[in-house]
Image (cartoon, rainbow over all chains, first blue to last red; front, side, top):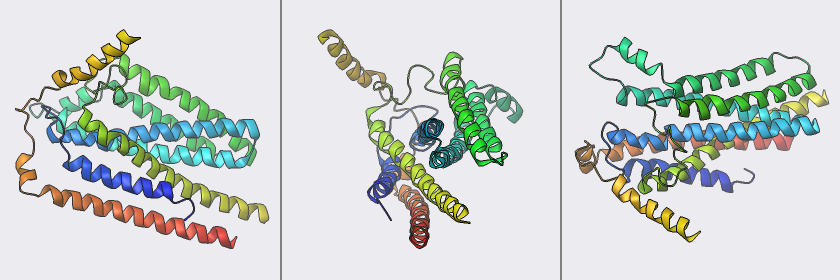
Length: 231
Length: 69
């Protein structure tokens, strides 16, 4: 394996996340109880997704500036793995919701009606759908240069849409989801110090795992590219 | 400047009051004290080990392909 140090770091951080995340002290909060530990997993999925999408849009811009196909491949693979992490964040969020927001005294339909209104859920669903459309658009164009150029432009649009859909609108509307004010998790005064010592390494660990998967996919895509250019 | 710094230090220590422990919140204390939490840790570490093992194998295979081409 080439350049293995950051892969080792990734594994070490994830092992620390699991051990520290399950065994270390956390604040005692009503309703959340032990599920507060989900912060190290659910929130990290979203953070890793945002970081990968940011890298993706940077590569999209680099493609438009240089017209080198390698940036197009990088941009696409970062976006795909970002979407996977986003879906995992959504799925884990739904599991968490069922333990914290759902009122057992209400019927399932009434609970769903209340939760489906959550601006954060709607916003992140829109963001993920826009990125899903990115894949559909990109893979439906045959011409290689056209495909890369249109995909890169659309990628910038999709990234721009992340701002209103997951960062701005959910903060403007009332929501059950924590972190509506200011910068959740990043704000120094927002999170209990005991949780920060696990949370920040966890974000880095999960992001590195995503980048590792991206790097494998990119290398396969490069090999494919090489094969086709020789034929 | 110094005012701001002092204020931020004060706010940092405000955490201690903000996060005053609500000891009535139910936590899985007996689950921890009888050691069953280690079962969960072991399961999660096993899954992680499986994923990492798989990624390393893929990495090696791709490296081999890159060398051959």
